[in-house]
Length: 466
Image (cartoon, rainbow, N blue to C red; front, side, top):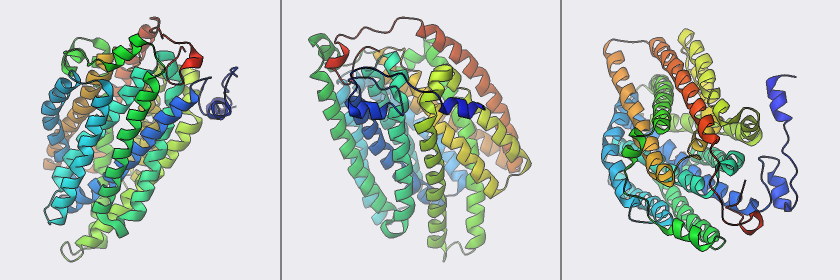
């Protein structure tokens, strides 16, 4: 029996007192009595949020590639990191003044309101590809990071290790359906129709977060309610990171992972732009045709790696966690990247790069993503909200800055795509060494007893002992 068959045969233990819903959910993760309603709400929220993001991600590719090209896309990623040097400290100040539900919903509604501005500017005929690209990069890391921080805050470490695979399944399904919807709607609705749909979904996410918070608070004692209503301490996200080796390792992992992923997306974008130019050679008269080709290509591309990610999230992630733990799951991504870029080094062709990037991203957005979110379970509330926001926002984009420099130098020196693939292999090796150190530190922290939970399991569908 091979490793994949061994994983799929892993079963979760039967637990007395489960409802029918919880018994059904236990086929996908180790959901226990009293946890079904809460984990389903959390997964639904992430489903809507990722659906909105993938609509906006398709719009982003259409605008930036049709108005700038692959090089402008890479350089714009560097601009995101510069903006986040301002955004992250500002976010920390706000987080120290409001409670968690106001923080998460306020950030979500702020970004939803921004979409109305982009729609108005676009209909005025302004070129907004670069501005929208910068905005989507900040939206992606901040809004999604805060929802996962909320989940980290609600669950204990043991609960999170059991339930995060199912919460992540909601995100994987939302990403897939959002990408499919974007691919089908890009022609009839256009980029601004997709922006409007995404804004509506974000408003729904904010409303659902309020509902979840109230649902949780009603089932907690006065001490837990008071803790949830308190703003965070005054420490900033960067302060928390630079004084904690564990958080520094997470930040380093995010930087390396993003360098490798951005490199692959750059190679793919170069090949897509070249293909669009060969099919529609007149850049002025055929600009709309190029936009449609790029939009349809990326809509299909996103759909494929998201559906494969859904399959991985549904049937393998929880079983991988059970078999080798969160620390072991950290090595799946770099091993796939190492094999994939070794092949691209030899044959950098669009059909082949497309397939390899689908494999890379499907594992990244399922196994690697869920393991990355679980790394914050054994941390403080301040680390969950502030340090996580700084890591997911600034350090992720700092990886883009580093790779933008590589793109600039490589383009100036006339590097072929195979040369960029060789650099990616070197970055992947460093990624593996960081994963080793991080897995050891996570194991060490996991030996510390989890925080106490005030109520018995049957009283709270969201917060209970593991």
